[in-house]
Image (cartoon, rainbow, N blue to C red; front, side):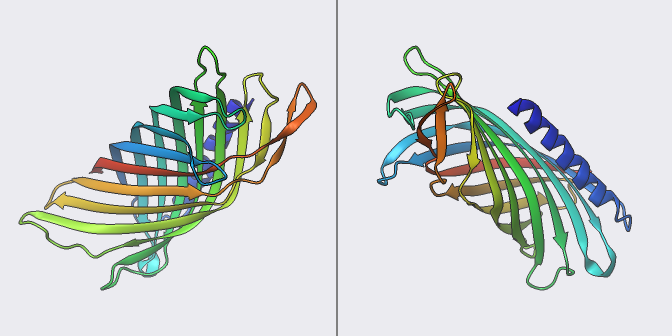
Length: 269
């Protein structure tokens, strides 16, 4: 059921965001499609501050963005993203503290609506953002330790600044971007695969910072970018845990941070 609800929310979010973009028919939509590969490092921390676990590995990335210029220098954009990969898991289980070395499959997707309230100026351009993001972590079972599936869903508000373009080399243009956002709602669903009852609880506030350097050959529809981003959050509130309906203590999501370093190639249409 969690998977069905997750896919339904993705579809609803994409339909709503697409409708918002299409409603402002001031100019043609400018589309871009990007693909990339990120090196991901996820770390969860124990309550005392020590490392609980790490997950490392490559994550494939896809992004589709449509933008439209509006009246008085304003602009509206829709950004859709997908990602996924298999990561190496090394650490301990959150509840039983058993050592665990296995693999984690992560699948994620998001939809963001961006609004530029003012025309670009000498200092660049500023955008306000509202978005939805979901991530599913499937920690695989081993012969002695059971796995679990964790689905995180969050809604964000934030801002993006894009610098004026400059010429780093003859025949190339470049610009930088800084984006920051924080969650206004974060929910977690955890399926323990029968060891405990499935649990839903409120996640900690998530913060994201992203830095991008984008380079484009003169007159080309292609561009290359180097991206760094960090998701970070504290310990979540504790929630009741049960087994076969009987109380069995409590559960929480430990503090974590996720660092991605990615190389992308983008084609504008």
